[in-house]
Image (cartoon, rainbow, N blue to C red; front, top):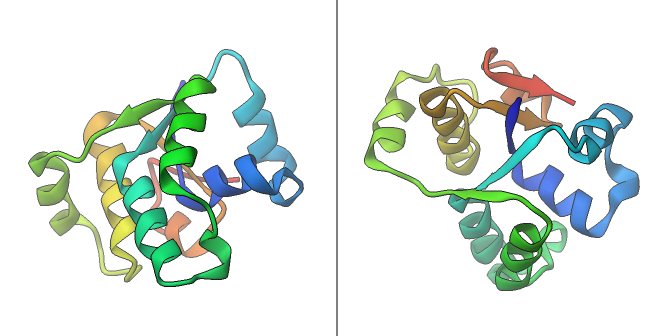
Length: 128
């Protein structure tokens, strides 16, 4: 199974692993799982860190490098992903979450999140 991992789960795995649920930890530590991060996550971290958000206090360059060094693959944002956002119901206002859900749908990936509101999109979103 290949998973696209939500920005907060990426941050928690890197900086605060104790915040991860047992289900999230199990997936992220499963050697058979293919783990991906979206370019949108790095963009989100860069923007929100520059705004001084406490929950995004990390250098986006370092996060990206650490993810790649730990076996994650990067998923670029394509125009097909952007267009697919229009097919999503209006359940969540965060554009970073919306593009990642669209990416997962287009690419046939499972989107892992700890956010119950994002999980309301249904398949392919998995709440962990």
